[in-house]
Amino acid sequence: MKLNIALLAGDGIGPEVIDQAVKVSDAVAAKFGHEISWTPALTGAAAIDAVGEPYPDETHEACVAADAVLFGAIGHPRFDNDPSAKVRPEQGLLKMRQKLGLFANVRPTFTFPSLIDKSPLKRERIEGTDLVFLRELTGGIYFGKRGREDNNNTAYDTCTYTRAEVERLAKKGFEMAMQRSKKLCCVDKANVLETSRLWRETVQKLEKDYPEVEVSYEFVDAVAMRLVQWPSAYDVLITENLFGDILTDEASVISGSMGLMPSASLGEKTSLFEPIHGSYPQAAGKDIANPLATVLSAAMMFETAFGLKDEAEAIREVVNKSLAEGVVTEDLADGGKAYKTSEVGNWLSEHI
Image (cartoon, rainbow, N blue to C red; front, top):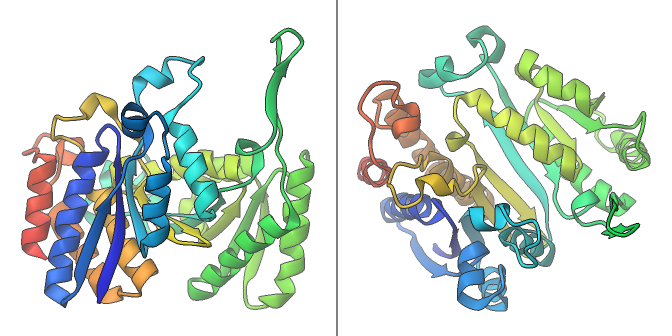
């Protein structure tokens, strides 16, 4: 099979971790007889520096023409520390999601047997955790009307959802639940917010189409609490953009490191795969960043975008082997040998 993949390395550690995912992907392709055509493109601060725009038209065209997009990370301190900046890397991310129709962000949280004691939570609380969030990605407060008034003394951000936006995300959630443990949790704030009442009402109407799925409804603050008390109680959770942004970062540290969790953003035109961590500019260029989340995102890409389950499993197996044998970067070394980012990538590709 020929796989056409757009490659958006982005900023900070993005290029370094993307390089390792490319090594591993090429090794898997060679093993299973596939051919990968990579199309690099600019985004984020790197694109602003080059062309003044965080998501250039050329990058969008490359993404639309590709079968899938593998993405690193975006962001730079000079924008984070300048609230008055008119053009920001994150604008490119929102624009990309909107133009590609990336409406469903899939963020799994699971544990690794060899790392279970590195989690900030007790072993007995997290053993057996294997949950997945579906976060709505193109609506809500991030895309609503915003502004300043009253001589710049009042600011507002508007959260808006349509029934169609909620329904398409919820259907993905029900379908995923049917393939897993047939449990679905709708996360909202329906006791306060009108948009959350629309979410709950829409999901309730869909229940009849999926009678085998056990559906629960929980407020976002309760879920935030239960994620650290008993995360294994959850399986598939669906929620809106802002709640999902916060809760998925909370869930990501259950495994012991944000450098371990992959994600996918499913869209109308194509799908994008990326690690859940940020650009970590402090580590950029030092060859110390953990590449495993990006490598596992490539595994999600093989399975989700191309239906290549054996190839995806080969990547997951070699990642588990590297963790068990201590071939890890400094964030997981725990006093032992810390491998460089590039060394981990080389080891993974050689052991495929």
